[in-house]
Image: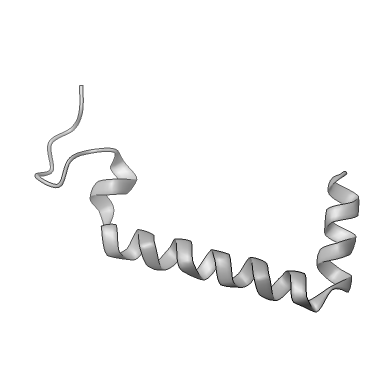
Length: 49
């Protein structure tokens, strides 16, 4: 299954563009939320139990 997806990715520019657009949205969202969301902590810097 992975091979099929990889071959589609390589052969279909529209698929690559779609995946790139989704990746950019996720990256932008992560940049807005900052390190607090990556660590799983609250915005006040506390680590959850």
